[in-house]
Image 1 (cartoon, rainbow, N blue to C red):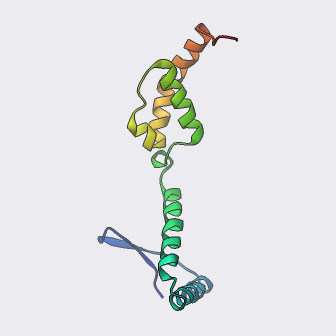
Image 2: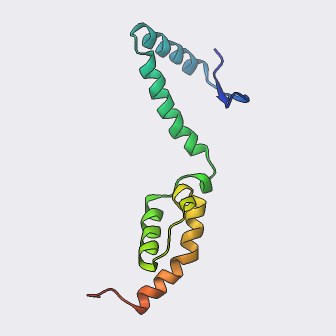
Image 3: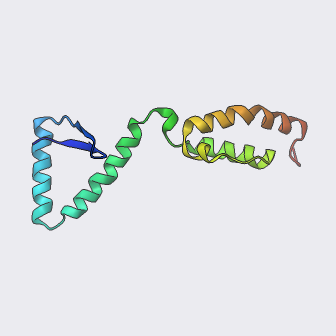
Length: 117
């Protein structure tokens, strides 16, 4: 059995599977087909693949981390500047935004400490 990922109908990537995994996959497909649950298996594989594919991206193309989002939101709110949509989508753009404004935020907080500090 050949497993191949098709990319936009223009080409594919062969997925190397060892014999044991290939045999288990064939059994899983057969089990799902006979139980009338092939669609559920396809959905499960699609979700697993989507997570795996995002892990294959270069780090600057991955989504920003939760910590980056929190810090960038603080920057945006305190400095009154818009958070670019690219920064919300890509870790690299988020890193650029944070590097550009982090020191400005720190300086503002040093010069104007929060009430109660």
